Picture 1 (cartoon, rainbow, N blue to C red):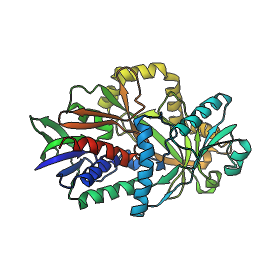
Picture 2: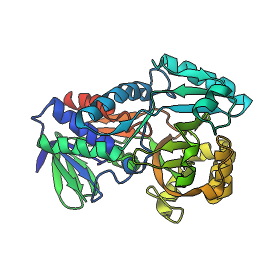
Picture 3: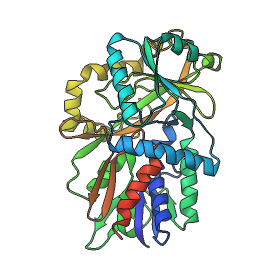
Picture 4: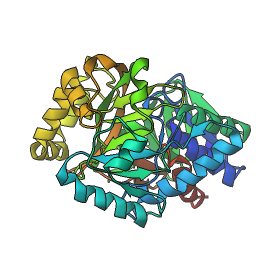
Length: 398
């Protein structure tokens, strides 16, 4: 079967890209291929459900631009499709003096990104809105919210099918062979001819990209983020979303408290190297994939520079007491007995050869392909904006 476009990956970014491409040109013959039997089984289905405001991201970066645009597009989509969401707001809390200038930097960055309703609050004001949180200063961010991203992604899928697009589930892509004018995507079930491949393969996006171009020089390093859940009797401790001031050296936000749209409160995540790309449990190990991560020169440089931070994250992974201690910096009343296992997600973090953990979205174009090679958080919030931008690149090919 021959298509104009084949999108690889049935997560929220792949679905948004397919949806936006068909919305702009309904005549396109498009198929989306997903290796799992259901959509959204990996990053989309295992995230915390936060609608991000764009506070953290460098002004002018793809993350900042797409998050801010995507935020508004997402809320409009949820309203149109009657998908529940809650703009409950969050606080970013400084707990040590050295974090004051970092908090000030965040505040200024937020203003540069157009978030004019954020505000600096003192200890008394913090206590009014989060009585159980201990901090020396904080930012109040009213834009932040919560939603069910799987529900959103499933709605994108409905729109794709309604527009005549095909969605093939349970079909792993085994290879991509290029000819002069098109490509053949070989799956575990069939061969599909296409004029253009759009790679939204998440945790395997680098491998797929290398099937389309010899110039891809990055590696996806999988970082597992583990969560606990608060027992129902202790949910009163958290009123909004509660975040620490993040370490500016890392693209992670630190352990925090998140209200869930379906009820309950998550605490976490940490960020530890997963021993396989889809390693949601410590016991899930793939020696080949682990060796691939460990042997990558860029990861070796990151590990050498930040081994102490990495060891601390790993220690918290194996020690509930250490994880609890990290949470107690924000809410001292929290005890280990208040926490039950809450599952985990795995973040597809691109790392370049020189030891840089890519902090921005990465889109690599090839002759017959467009590769989205780094789309971690806030990609879910940004999905419609990313899909909009990638679909513009798609339509330029036709």
